[in-house]
Image 1 (tube, rainbow, N blue to C red):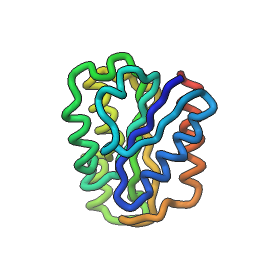
Image 2: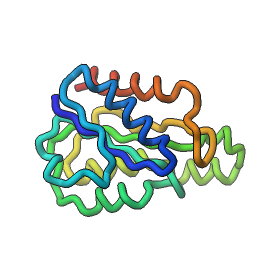
Image 3: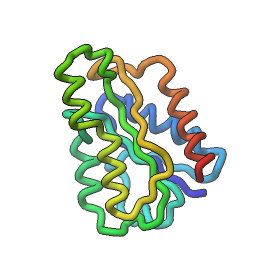
Length: 159
């Protein structure tokens, strides 16, 4: 299997999750973990699996991942298995009715990433995942790296 984990990270939390996912995928074959700024469209068609992640800000992706997906041609990853993830704050930790309402209304980055991947031919293999940070800048909540590795294992089981 040839897999690529693409991410963008502001405070380092999403990168840590991406690397944990990459480590969880390694038993199945060749895995690269790269920031979105280092990826070009030519790397994508030969993949068996593409995993894509971004921090959630303003209930969506940050700019670089959004632009990357927007600029890929139609069918850029036709038939490639895909999975999407994000890092986010828990609505319970924020403890705001407005935040809870907005999160319910607009969602998080992972769902938007999956939609973008599907629009260019990707085939989702697992539901989008959100990994929790303790505040806007993190750090990750305890156990999230292990949960990311386990999520990668579930992806492998579904391939």
